[in-house]
Length: 399
Image (cartoon, rainbow, N blue to C red; front, side, top):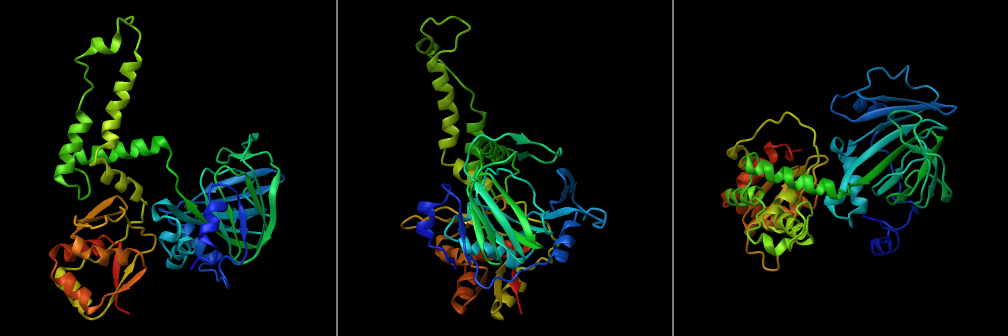
C-alpha cells in the first residue's frame, strides 16, 4: 500500500526533518465533501471548530455548530477531529503509513478551507502527514527553534513567523510530512480539503498518570476484564508504603531538615518497583489502547445468532477507527494471547491467537470453514468474538 520507501523514510525523515511526498495516494478521490464534514461538525460528540480571519483579526467558534451562515465569512476554515472514527475510507488512510505502529496513531483531522484561508503559523508536538484532497494549498515548513508567541484569540496559540526550508504547493494526492516542533503554515490556493494523519506521543506525565489511573481502576475493581491476580498484585504495589528500617544507613548524621541522596534513591526505587512490575504491562497496554471511540447503540447478538451468521459465510469487519494493539509475539507463544481495544483487555487461548491477529491486521476477514470449526470448538474464542461484536468494535457483514 505505501508508495514511499518505508525504510528510507524512517532513516531519513521520521522525527528528523520534513518532506514532501508527491503522489502519496495516486488517483486520490475524496472520501468526504465539505457538506458531509459540516454535518459531522453539528454533532455534540464531535470536536470541531470554525476559524476565520480578516486583516489579522481572528474569530474561533467551537462545535457543535448549528448555523454556519454567519460564521463562514472572510477567510475561513472548518476543522473536524476524529473523522476516521466515523468513515471507513478515512480510517483506511492510515494504511498508507502501515509501517508505523498502530499504538502511535491518533486520529485523522479533516479540514475544509476557502481560498486564502489558513490557521496561522504554529507548532505541533506530534508527527503529522497532511494529505491534500481536492483543491490546492501552499505549505511552508521551517526548522525547530525559539519563536515569539502570538495569541490573537484566546483559543489560538500561534507564532510570529519563521524561515521556511520547504515552500511548496500541494495538489490532490500529494502529502507533506511534518515532524514534531517544526513550525508550519498552510494557505489555501483553491478551496481545499485536507486530511491530517496525527500520531500520538504521550509525555512522561501522561504515561505516569495513565498507568496510575489504570492501576487505581483495577484496585477498585473497575478494570475492564482485568485479571484477579493482576488486580491483587497491583493493589499491593500501589498501597505499599515507603519504609526505612535501616534509616541510619541512609542519613549518616545528616541535619534533620536535609534529605539524603540515599533517601532520594530509595524513593525512586520505590516508584520503579511499580513501573517494572510485570503486572504493570497490561495496565500500560490498556492506556495505550485508549481511543475515545464514539458510543453507538448496538443490537447485541446471542451465541446462537453469531454461529448462524458465521456458517452463512459472512465476513467480520472492523468498525471505523478501531485500532487493536497487542504485545509482541513470544517465540513459542505457549501463553494466552492478550489484546487491547479502547481501554478494554481481552484474552484468548494461544491456539486461536493467529486468527485474531489476522482479524486485527485487516479491515475485513472472511471466515473460512476451518476458522468456523476453530471458533465453534473454542468457547473462549467464541465468547470473545461475540464480545467484540456486542461492544461495537466489529460487526458481521452479511452483504
